[in-house]
Amino acid sequence: MNDDVDASTFQPNAGSRGLIGGKYEVIAELGRGGFGTVFKARHAGLNKLVAIKVLHASLLVDEVTRSRFELEAKAGANLSHPNLVSVLDNGFTERGEPYLVMEFVEGTTLDQFLSTGSPQTDDLLNILIQVGKAVRYLHDSNIIHRDLKTSNILVQDIGCQRYARLLDLGIAKVFSPDGGEKNVQLTSTGMIFGSPAFMSPEQCQGQVLDARSDIYSFGCVIYQCLMGDIPFSGENSLQVILKHLHETPKALPYKTQRQYELTQVVSKCLAKDRTHRYHNMKELLDALQKIAVAPPNEKAQIRQDNLSRSYAEPSGMSDKPKQILGAVAALLVIAIVVACAIPLCGMLLGQMSKGVEYTVKIPPATTAAQQVQAKPVTQPEKSVSDQLSQQIAASEAAAERLRTERLALEKVAADQAARLAAERQMAENAVDLQAVEKAAADKALSDEATNRALVRQKVEALAKASNERFDLVQQQLRSFDQSAQNLQSGNMSLRQYNDRMAQPSGAGR
View 1 (cartoon, rainbow, N blue to C red):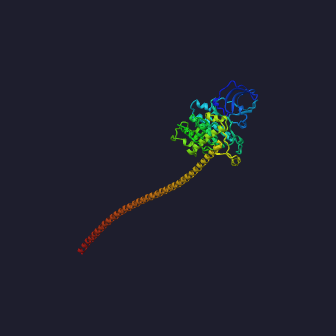
View 2: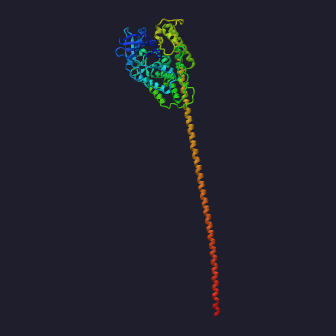
């Protein structure tokens, strides 16, 4: 309910009683953080429970902090979504302290919910999809939350249904519809806001943020849901920030196909380069909803291996620039102690990383005109901030050179890959052509063999017919010879008969 108050640490305090704004009766103190205190209160007229966040009086001199608080009130009052904690009212106490009134939600934080055991994948997907819908609604309303974490998500059971509610817009960045920032003065370069354990690399560096920063933080939330722990931890916030910039989280285990798909979603969310993440919450929600409708107990079809490479893709940094940035970061802390002498340094070095919010102001580099007008100084008289600026400029130049070299190598690799792909395509085409020619030759041989068999069959049939005809002719010739012999015998018999007939006639006369 506050960007500085972790809801998991809420402890009622019966001594925190009084009226806020003349109409809210304080019942108990729920939590306290670097920017404000959250109270459980009751509307005196409506007898309705509310949660009220009041800015610390010690910070009222900070106009930026007051503006951020008022921005939260204006942004929250215009929002209405079933998975967002609604902002009901705002104003100032009798001592001039600004306060924000929100609906009071009975439930537990996602942090506490995860600590009770290992939730089922269906339950986690239900919670994550509801929170994702709330974040998408914020993005569609030109608002970046900038502090997504498990302690800012409430889990509430109503009947047999479980609901997730996203809270705390205290450090949200609001954009105008045309893309310009409404609170440019609140998010100037060099100022860092958020909880280090869930901050994106660009947020750690104080860069201009967009929706993909929330997607990275949402990936950290999913990681904690699956692993039971945050992606990176350290002895102080600075160590956690450096790990977000350069290190890879431990690979997530999985047993089912749905768990494997979730690890791939986390992998894409936690890409160091924002261009490699989901482009918007709609894409991320589509991926989660697709996993939710998949068979729950289907075994993973992909072999289990180390998925950590994709978390860091692409880092674009070698060990040497990382060491330079680490040294620059250490010098930055020393410079803040020497130049500012404020409790911020103690907060950076002493507090644990989880749930901590802080602001770092990087001293602007001296311009060329200012260097000309300034009094000349000797080398020993140079301030720590000037040395720090030189170190930062050197590290940025080294990083730019590395980025240029990486782009050149990527282009060479892409050209080689294209050439190899073209050669492979040519080889495949040649193989296909040879296969076609071989098939045609095989078909021709087969046709020739078939034709030979047909011709042989015809020749054998003709030979058989000729033999049969020859036998028939021979039989006919034998019949003709027999007939000729019979005719000759008949003629001889006839001549003998005629001779016998002629003899008696001559003798009688």
